[in-house]
Length: 221
Image (cartoon, rainbow, N blue to C red; front, side, top):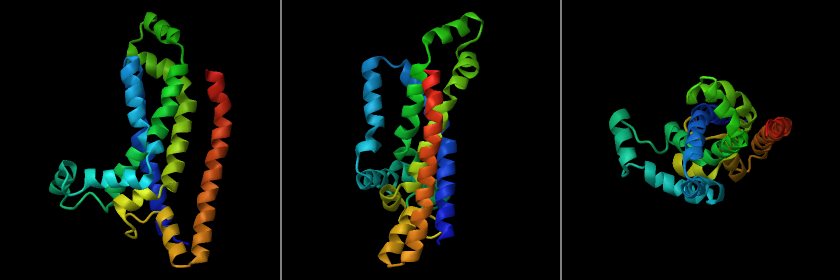
């Protein structure tokens, strides 16, 4: 059992959730304020990771984060090392390929909250921030849980983007899904079976949590 790879995957998934879900809330609030045509266009662009092949998305991220890119050059000047084939690189890639899994549930949750509730909060003296924190955020909790579960599970299972951007450096970018692929290539059936079983357990747990949370989302609507 490759515990190092599994630990790296869990670390990547946790950091992705912590960084991405608050950002997704801000993006969902911004999308709500956009006029319909512009909002739909942004939603389509944001949903690209759902339909774009992971290797193709990984290639474009590799180009965007590589040494020849402005971001890659800036990162290397600041840190003294490249962004690709590092943990920071796959973390940034993880934020991108998980974007629709975080934004879409939260955007749907916001859309299900009646505008009258916000207006009533405004009439009670709450500003936009106060209305969101005290009225909308409690109603949004089931959607936040869904976003967290989807992002966490998808990060654990992602292979193509991580391999393209990070390679398979032990302790740095070799996640559980990459270690599983390496084990199969090396005909190490025991390691492959154990890693597959652990990833399956996480996936089943994620589905169970989603089944438990979904009735609460429906009641909120």
